[in-house]
Length: 332
Ligand code: ADP
Ligand code: MG
Image (cartoon, rainbow, N blue to C red; front, side, top):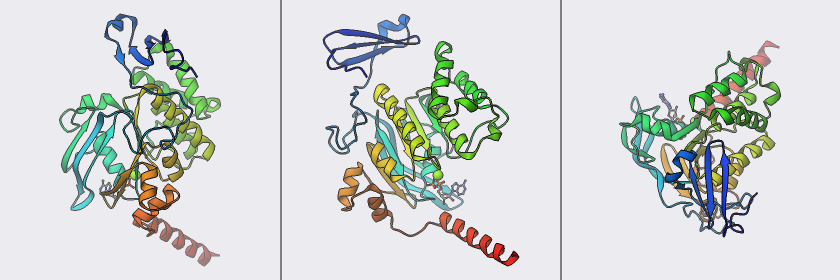
């Protein structure tokens, strides 16, 4: 990795496809092409320190990577036939931040993400995404983010490569870098060797990995990931998070994600909000949440904050399992 600080007295020019990047005095400027060199945009400053954890990189706990808020949520409510799934939540995510939205099953995480990404209308409240309101400015909002859904959204009748290529064209990934980028990402999630197989022959975990690769093809301002790593092994989860974190640090991409893996959130997130029964019950860095609950891990802090009662969805799964086991015994 290049040390920008050491080279800060010189001007460096880097190219990624048509994108031109100038590095001078420790600051990074970018133009989308040579023609647009007159309108250089300064990128948020990022260090190249290897995987700084939020508590060790010199930042104050919970301090913003960039003071500007790219997501603003105020008094957001969503009801389904009288049932309140999201109950007056407010929070902000700063540009360039990795933000974890954690909560037990049924807490309202996916419902919130759907409202943030124009897929669901709020019952009440206000959202600003990169300065735009999804309720009245859907198109502008849709240009500012990418998403990896909790539920699979791949075309089963296409091969992995076709799925990813289709997405790359849809999101205007530049032609000259497209194939290299696809190869890089399919290798990242270890699906390159299976690229020509139909997605319907893929296992659940393979589909998940393919969706992540697809979601990372273009680097939006904000990337939403709803339980992206569910069911993946620790090695794969590590690879994927290193990659996402690298894009976040290099390009200032804001990341908003949910997960049930607390170790992941503790390691990766700059800040965390915990939602339970539709309400936000705590926000802060992992360190702050641990201090507040005198816990030694985020997992312990999470349990201290949300209680150890098993949630409905999980109970019903356990009940189903018990019923199946009873039936199995009966039939023997
Ligand atoms: P999470 O993602 O945190 O597990 P969700 O946001 O998916 O939770 O769901 C929150 C609550 O809202 C749950 O009780 C769920 O059953 C309910 N819910 C979600 N979508 C709908 C819907 N379309 N109709 C009725 N209830 C829903
Ligand atoms: Mg969910």
